[in-house]
Length: 379
Ligand code: SF4
Image (cartoon, rainbow, N blue to C red):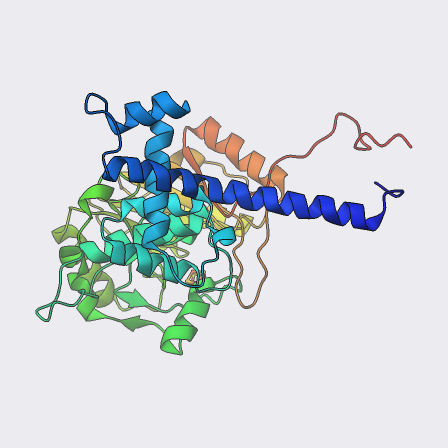
């Protein structure tokens, strides 16, 4: 603490720091502008590339030179009157936009990520870019408009599947932590079970953008993310229509999850369907193990999300995959993390049983232990 320093001296120091920050923010832009001028106006000897010429005269590597130009062009594409030079976006924040070929798409995404009142981050821009790539790749209607009868692109709540498909919505389990309920209330004004027959065509109409074909989870479709398709209240004919559509469209990998595992037993599961049950509390362990010993499916899984107590399995080896997650925020409950001990115990059981383990992005807890009981506080 500089308790003896006059306030005006500190203020001057702060002003200089602010200037440095602004210069540093502008630097890649200014460098890119000049590199681009040299490239576009061919301001270099004929026997050198512009990269070689700039590198020889400045010491910048060619990789840096291409990066500066790319950044300048991206920012220039987005140039909107409200951008003051000193508030140029960070290079890492705008970089994901380069995945979009059309300038118009870059602008749409940039507007979108700036419209929610929070400064965009590299993650929010990346997610919005992916969403845009997916949206423009979908087939157009006869009127040339984007076909909206396609799968939904998921967000990080469901990051093990890139798509969700909701031919049935609504649920009667009434879990307090249910954010699907909140979404249903916002868009449909209810969360009662409902069938949406027109969505049965979505496995046929949805297109994977060629540039995302290698993305992990790009073929995975979470079936009925806004429902429990196997709730006791769901008419058998609704389930059959969904399962028949799955059988007819093996180009996707369907992920089905229920809190009512006993209803899964009677179906035959094709290899492109992964079936799972939510086990968030110990009381769900026995019904899960009882049902899954009679289920024949290529991939059987547990979703321990939100992990809400310590879980002890007798036969976790019945399952191939264990997803562990925290609690996301809903209108009735705040976001929360499980205790590390619960996570660790489940992880160890899964390792022992030979299951693959998937930590959801909403699981952020890490162990914070000390070698003594007092956290090093000897005072
Ligand atoms: S089972 Fe799933 S969809 Fe149904 S209320 Fe619970 S969290 Fe919501």
